[in-house]
Amino acid sequence: MAQALGDRLAEAMAEMFHKRARDACGFGLTENLSLPELLRERYRGVRPAPGYPACPDHTEKPILFELLGVEAATGIRLTESCAMLPASSVSGWYFNHPEAKYFGVGKIGLDQIEDYARRKGWPVSEAEKWLGPYLEYK
Image (cartoon, rainbow, N blue to C red):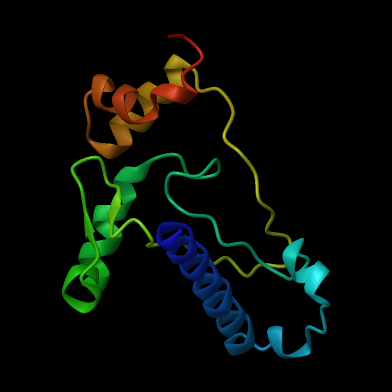
């Protein structure tokens, strides 16, 4: 029960910070959304996160953590598989463009994996390891 409560509080805080970001950009101040509209994410912008369908590559988290000094500032750390500890932790990006929409990455072809691996400076096997569930050819 404590784990479930911690998870819900972490997500609620992320939503609150997303609202603050929208307010800081100016357009959130004019949002007059009901609770059901907020729950259906009718606001402007999206908050995708590494490991979710739009951003399946968890390996961006170490970069984020280093840039922001996350472990020193919060005590949140990453496991070797890039899971966050404590488990009731969230990370993500805020995109406040009016046309931003949530989406999921579909199946990835070998040509895409080869290109992604090249851009990340990885061997193809490393890209396949991190994106295995999304591969169309394995």
